[in-house]
Image (cartoon, rainbow, N blue to C red):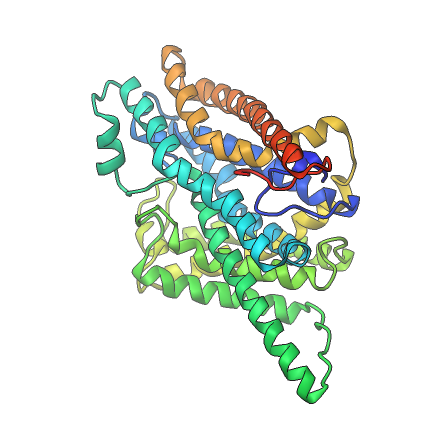
Length: 411
């Protein structure tokens, strides 16, 4: 996590190789997200905006298989990104201080979101619409397509920037208050207690309940200005805070094996139980009756939120532990991919829309076309991301004068 990681998910990790596994994990997650978006663009169920104009869709059997493979990861992957961000947040805050930390978040997260919402994503959607024979203007896409200020996948960056800014401000105020209080009382603060099974269960319960309450008014897949996925905020915030708490207990560098194994077993049990509960609740493979699971004052929404939170917490912890065991190696080629990861995440939307539009020329089924688009999008996004990362690293080196990157994306 040296120069190659200057463009990152809102953090500039410590130079220690002990955190390499986190960079490699989120790089793999970026590639998986790109592939899933490519596949969902040809899904009848939807989940990626190319489904608004797709020319072919999967057969029902393929659609069901896609739901089985991609569905569980869709419940986990965003929360896992926030968990990793939380693991790295306090380390970055301590190194930079409040002002530089906030400025860095705006540069690395806020500016990419703004550029995507105002330019990159509207242009990408317009290209896809025109390729499908819909003669609409770029202004119509920007002004009338719902939701307004949609940024594609970059809503994640704006929400993480908000959470990070609130955390940094709250921490600064807490330290000021603690310094003032300790000068008067001389009291010493205790270190954090262990993250026990009971406490992790409390996190699951809190995320479940908060998700249920939020989704009464903001159901899953409802649109808001900026497409901020507010129905996901409870899990995003919960995992971000869990990551901060876990880092304070050293889980960013080493996850206790007993915790990793226990969470892995719990995740497998949840995956096995979830389909049974779904069928027993009346959900079918054609998604008939899915409405109550998405929100509102329905017991199905509470059950869905509980399964989602359980799978999210347990699988996220297990994946971080597995990454520590298997993804901690070094290598120049791997470093290039990790350095390009965030830029690849930023530009994946336009890349996918353009490639899918070009692929309209191929008279082949979706089962052939979608994987081709997925592979091409991963390669092209990371290649372009590497060029973007190299450009900003070179600018940062010139600006800092010491060969180290002064800032990241947007510097």
